Image (cartoon, rainbow, N blue to C red; front, side, top):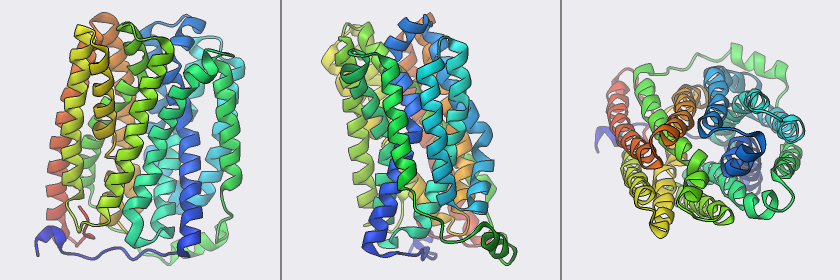
Length: 414
């Protein structure tokens, strides 16, 4: 048995098939809700830009500010989830994002309002990312945990898919603001679906006092966080501007929305399939993540070429590959991270989420700036290079994680 396969699988707890299914639905519903603000802005970029008279770079900066809020709150969010429970964070976050989506619909009249409201949206989003990882690590069936994480992470591109569908269904009929109101309604429904906590806050404090502080190997997590961030930088930049890039090569506005929806649907499918396959493997999950990043980089480069020559069908293919492979690895990444850090899943994912949110901050800003001052072709070439660097960092982080098992051992699954 290789060093990678040595170690102990986390035991986890299971509430039975019915409980597992309900818990998974809750995690998905809340994750979709908190992902809606940035993806609605990206999908409705053309309409919002025209309505608020924004430049392409201003729109990119506004979306980046959401990721700035997430980056600042990333590590504290993991500690908060460990302290008060993932389920409490999920309910608070769902209510908060409902209020924020409604405010975007009602009061946004300039770039300043949009940016100020997207900042706390980012904080709410990262809170759910760490809390849902903790929630599922404690409640999901260990034998189906890969599938659970794949389905949960599929909620993020589902939000992108809904954003794309909102273009022809809502934005081009009654206006983009109504899409945000619809999102607020979905968030309230998600909040109502969250179950009551199993323990009181006092009981959690008592449990924490009697629990040893878990060991977290920082260097591997930092390197993995860098790889995660580079991968998210590429994906977030592409998602933020896929509709405007499509319109730039003379795809209709409704068609551009459908391109975003197709790419999101591809990412949803890939995340679920990779989670299902992960349950059938003993390890090498981070290696698979790196491989997917390389394939996704190829998709970004196809996008760059199609944006340069104006080939519409090739643009659609590039978008599907870029988001399918280049953004389909997130669930597998979090699954591997939770398997290797069973005693501190929220803390570990909070650290890597920091890199992801910094990458998310940089992606829309860089793609928007490059697109405005140079071209979409140059912008998407940058995302392709980012994908290659991300894969390299993941491989290095994986090796460091395996090496750290001697000081002390970490659960298998990398």
